[in-house]
Length: 127
Image (cartoon, rainbow, N blue to C red; front, side, top):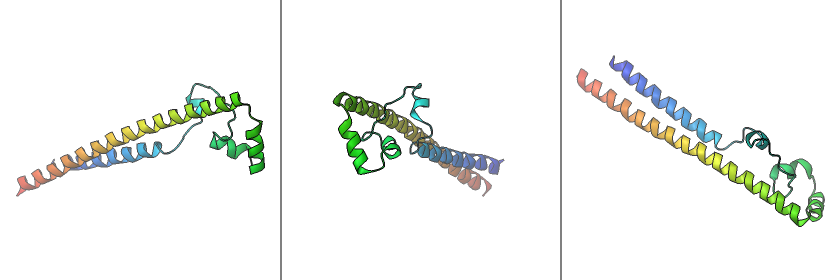
């Protein structure tokens, strides 16, 4: 009985720790495209504002410069606004995942304290 209680508490510690790491990892990666997560809104091609667009479609500095110079001011503002929206949403999602990660970490600390206390109490009771 005593070892089962300690085992369950220790296993809970490991589960909470794994969930914490998994959630923290999710805050670092982008798992799906923005159109799938934002209800299908397509953002315009936005070189200089979007890293992925720039790397996908512009291959040389000359092309990049030419693309930038060909943009109208209103298009540049539209592209920058779209990219700002994506960055704000990205930070929000990452912050949510980090908050969840910290909660799981706190759970693992509490579970570790409980398992340590149980182990100590059962050891003292057996002595």
